[in-house]
Image 1 (cartoon, rainbow, N blue to C red):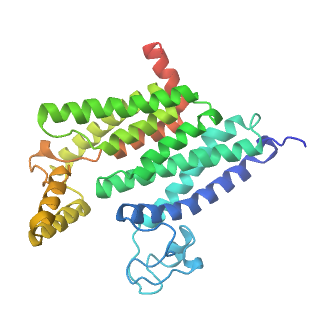
Image 2: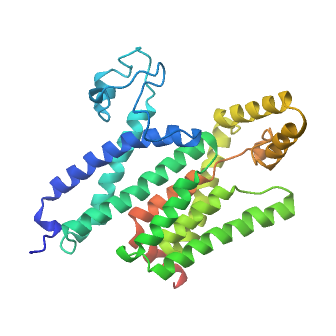
Length: 323
């Protein structure tokens, strides 16, 4: 059977198909972002109106276009639809277009259709998983294990199929990423200052970085995340004067405090232990320097930069540090 290479298809067709798939995946990404941190099933029930719970018809669930022809309001109860939904769908389409443009088309003479399809879904899964992780961390200040550990496992298993790292480099990178951040910013920070400097979810995200891009990628992710996070945080403090805690985090703490207030005996002690073990159990310090900032989105930003600009970034690092 004759091998069919990607270059037999017009670039515009490949890009167009990729963007369509990305938009459809972006629609599902909205489900993940909303349901995953709330412990809800991703598969059941189907899409429904967040205001009245009415099932959304397929023709009202077309990515981006449905929002436009409904003029931003639900058909069932005419409530306003959050602009987040079409924006996430657009991000899914843009991510898929970037995967096609940066990871497939430059190698269209070398990749078979089967290889191109496999790499497309691998890289798109990484990009969308990272976007979901960043959105959830911004709203809830948590990084779900299914996205961090799941992404790390996908990176390890896919390393023989990708050009970035070998399986050994992937395993070493995952170990270095997790242990390095855990030791410096969680264990050591706890010993020196009495509380962890970062959450364990950030260490798991660093393991994902190492699994996909090796030890140097894990180090670059930490450096890039810290640099970009510092710049954005400083700009936010200068512009607004403070950084406020996400409403979802405040609401969750208030629910736990209310449960403690109404509980008695062993149940109350168990809830108190849960409160003290939670890094977000106490209200944030009102001083500007005591603000809590989700670090995950900045790690994600660096990882996306690595995904789409891997070769030039690696060449730059090698030139600067002789790696």
